[in-house]
Length: 113
Image 1 (cartoon, rainbow, N blue to C red):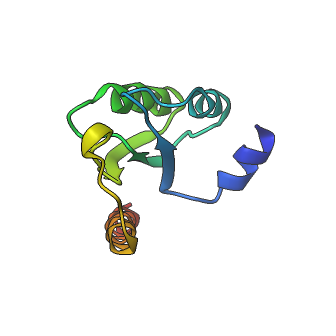
Image 2 (tube, rainbow, N blue to C red):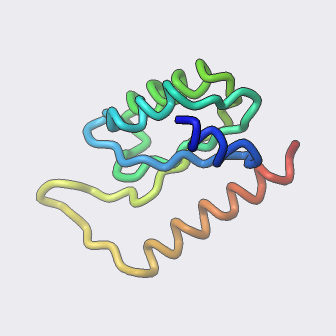
């Protein structure tokens, strides 16, 4: 993970975006977090496909980023869609709204040292 460590050294806060399925983050994100040095970094978790009523993924990822020496700031939920028989098709304006929400959060966190 030397490349990843080199790539993020100058950034703070750092946004970690990951898909989540049934409250379980992908093993690739967990593996990444076990290898990377996040000491002193502020972390925002962006979860795609999760919902706020299932905190398992947030708890697992939050614990992992804190183990790596970071300061967990918050979680943002992107594409809060209903899966299964009530699936909602998302349009461009949905993605634009989520992108604006993420940008506003990053701006706010960046202003606070």
